[in-house]
Amino acid sequence: MENRPLEYDYTVAKMFMLTTILTGIVGMLIGVILAFELAFPGINTILGDGLAEYTNFSRLRPLHTDAVIFGFTLSGVFATWYYVGQRVLKVSMAESGFLMFIGKLHFTLYVVGVIAVIVSLLAGVTTSKEYAEFEWPIDIAIVVVWVLWGMSIFGLIGIRREKSLYISVWYYIATFLGIAMLYLFNNMEIPTMLAASPAGETGFGAWYHSVSMYSGTNDALVQWWYGHNAVAFGFTVPIVAMIYYFLPKESGQAIYSYKLSLLSFWGLMFVYLWAGGHHLLFSTVPDWVQTMGSIFSVVLILPSWGSAINMLLTMKGEWQQVAASPLIKFMVLASTFYMFSTLEGPIQAIKSVNAIAHFTDWIVGHVHDGVLGWVGFMIMAALFHMAPRVFKRELYSKSLMATQFWIQTLGVVLYFTSMWIAGITQGMMWRAHDEFGNLAYSFIDTVTVLHPYYTIRGVGGLLYLVGFLMFAYNIYKTMTSGRRVEENELQSASPMGA
Amino acid sequence: MNIAELQAYGYFALTIFMVVILYSYIYHLYSKKKNADGCDYENYSNMALKDDVTDTPVSAISDDKEK
Image (tube, rainbow over the protein chains, first blue to last red):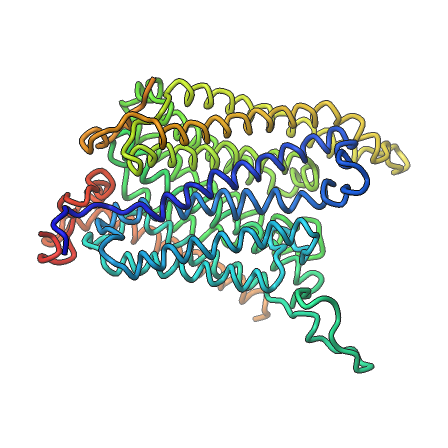
């Protein structure tokens, strides 16, 4: 063995930081294009009729959602795992050649998967299941990537020095198990080439096409059990894992109540899986499933707020740090937006509210104050905290961070306020009728009224994208030209240049 | 007894069971530090705060690895 002191090895974490930033830029850029396509439909064919196939809303929409979910968010989850995992288990990846190999293989296959997804979705190859558009060969590749991540998690846990698992590790494990279960069941599909007609014909469709094993109402139930819990185990659980590590670490404060963090964990695990039925209110699924979905959604406020309040109380007596550090600002605003969207969601899941909100832009607004305000802010904050430690350099610019914070906060506020107004206007107009029950408005009437709000939403999204580019630039400059720092400067608050 | 009544009794029993589990867990979290070998759960926060590779683990998995 070499005589060097043991250090954490962030090689794989750095690789995933890169894909977090790249897929974030791609996903958010497409999102902004889509927002302006809704406001100004001419943009659908901006590159001419010949290329309209690749620029229209319906072709780009799954690319946006999948790039930000499976690209930006998952990369962020992996990047933080390969950083946090080592530290709270007090074991370095450099201690295991096998785990290092698995980590690099995990990253390599993940990149191959991302490229396959981008190419196939751009080519219009899709299963047409929302957030599960990938055809079966890609699904199999994703399962392999996931299993590799599992090997990394449990391998690192297997060689740990710390006997107990820190609360973040619980959340990462839950992410791994939750998504594994959801993804496998929702993507059960049969390649069409294996099908046969009663007349004996075989080999239908291209080799990569498939049909779901579920149909009709069953398909809807499995799809939204998956869809909602993708929010649970992709957008909530791993992000809570991040904030439970990064906020205490950056602020130097112990978690306000470790016991509350455990209680919220089990509460979240028990309640979340039953709430998906709220996506199918007033549809053909059994009434008791709809009622259960509504009730569990409301109960979900408790564990969600348990975590969020725990984070805000961690800052008790230390609120001057929020004013002083843009990094703390990002995390405190993230937990505030977490509280906000976990209150808004249950409200929308109440049947009488859902009667207005269903299928409207209010839902889109809800998703985005969650993902932009909570997920996006927390992942960026995590990367900001990690950058000085993995590159051994000071964060390039504090003022750039602060500017980015305010630009993006303004962007999120414009986004969700415009979608509130648009959604409720839409819902009311769709329902309005005269005394004979004739609808008062046709669909195009709502489109005309909504135009200004769609424009405001586009501007909000653009501001967020601009902020994200500032983030990418700041991280790039940190990596290349930040002042070099010593280990003792990295104990709690991150060092930042002017 | 028809199926609806059975469901209602089952639902009631399950709710009581879950409430008992929940409060038992809370009791366990608070009472554990008073036991002879107990530990204060709040100490686990230090796993994040003292997470250098050279820091002493909050509860080490074995003595030889701790060194």
